[in-house]
Image 1 (tube, rainbow, N blue to C red):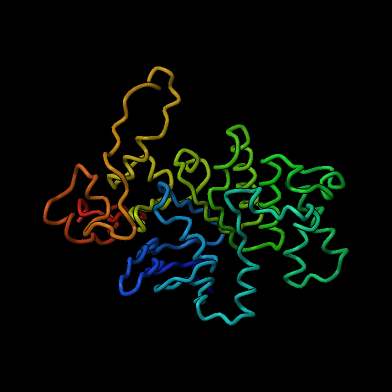
Image 2 (spheres, rainbow, N blue to C red):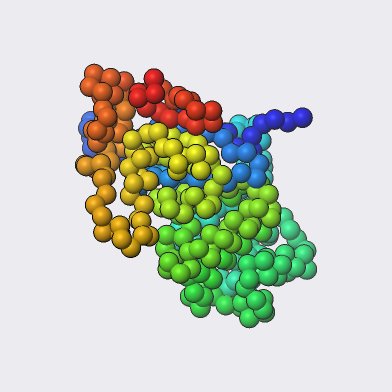
Length: 326
């Protein structure tokens, strides 16, 4: 019996070299700096963090759009960095990608039929009848009906919600084992967001795929994911089942994120919320020790500002990178 998780990320680092001027080296952007987590088959995992924390870089590294400088990514127990060209193509067929901007993700010169057929053609589905059937079935599952009215349309002729449905359809038409959704609703109107998230959840449960949901919006995570990872300045600082994380956050940054979720109670809507002062650190020169210590009210001088905390598990299944739980 194979007990390997669907995806295993181990101590992953993705750094980018900054431009050099003569002998002057501007440094490296440490976008992902020592990240580890697993995704089980059929599990929905959310990666949450503010803009610039490295979560999109992490997603693209998993998809092999970026190459890490160190660490390992294993898919079904196999290290993808050792894949041959043919096996890497097979891996990409098994991993779907849903981008943030649906209009930018769709080729403007291709109609819906060609957009959805393209992955099938690239990965060797030669029979046109089989491709046509797969495309039509996908449109029905996306509630884009009747198909004959949608197939000939170009991206600019579709609404934002329809465009994102096509992006979702393209990501799943090859029946992948893993889908990576990078801020899939941030560019959409609020009225459409819940509809798209419900569709994604339906796809994930119906197909039994692993799903990585990248977002800065913690309010959507509680209704969507099984497990949540909180990312700050290139590191995963807390991870737990979503209900446990929301009800019992351990890291001061996670507490601040939850505290910043808008309160729908009209009585308290204008009440002041306590959020940490300052800004997220530069990924070129992150602070020593805990990345959050310059903004943390619980900072222990001589420890938090000097030494990077280790990953602890004070509660079963609930991990945190914080000296308060040493």
